Image (cartoon, rainbow, N blue to C red; front, side):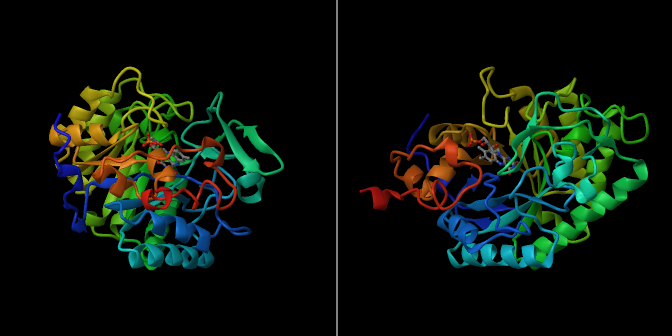
Length: 370
Ligand code: FNR
């Protein structure tokens, strides 16, 4: 591998958006929206603006409805107050020279009645309990077990696609440069895609074609608002976060990539294994290859990438861009550090979710450490 290769640091056109480099800030839930109302705040705006040198920022997952919420203090994108809060964030990012997509989120079964409208049960493709998964519902209750969800009726699905469409519209009003559909990490869309969580016998379950039907309904809904050049999708073909699995990720995600190709979306971001980049067995190369074969748009690789592995995989054509999660939490100036091959700050896991400026906006830049 050639450490002097500059591809990672060269401009790249994503859809029709000009990025100054190929380093993407991965979507990162930080559970610091202001309360009540799950509204993005000035503090959130500062945090994102600090990271504006990334080629593209993808926002933390933002729920498209109250039903789509699964954890306390995550921001929403369905009330006027939330939209105004996001506008402060995108203004701060743009003023700092950055670009930002909103990650649109519905958690499906990964929730709890305490977070749901009217204390209802969370919803899912099938009434299957996510064994072993928990959610954080409040400072008082902390992490709690998830109940068995209610299976959605087929005639409720257009309403949820409409929640995504409104989220897309609100993202435009809030000044985002585009949107990412969150179809990864065991949440609602992933629950429909994967055979382990989708036991439906109607046209939304069974065959791969059927399991992809709801996702494509959501894609069509957001296409009413955004040109395809500004729409991406995130998937995690072999991830198990959220107690999820698929019997045949290779076939499922080959078919998905083909559909996303037909729909003309700008990019697919792939979590190349588990939620926190754990890939003892290596990256799922055959699945990655299948997606690359079927999809001619941009491919963003994610999951425990180092600077050097990003350079190597981009140069080798395995991905077009690389996204970074934990490293950019701890290094607001990640691009600068990577370009100088400088040392990185370590992340503090204890401040990932919830809290104040500590472990959020107070990680020093290289300049500040020197
Ligand atoms: C995440 N991840 C994540 N993924 C996603 O699609 N939406 C989200 O909101 C979040 N939130 C989130 C919060 C925190 C604190 C972590 C650590 C992770 C997953 C994340 O985007 C990424 O896939 C993993 O962190 C692996 O990449 P890194 O950290 O190894 O670069």
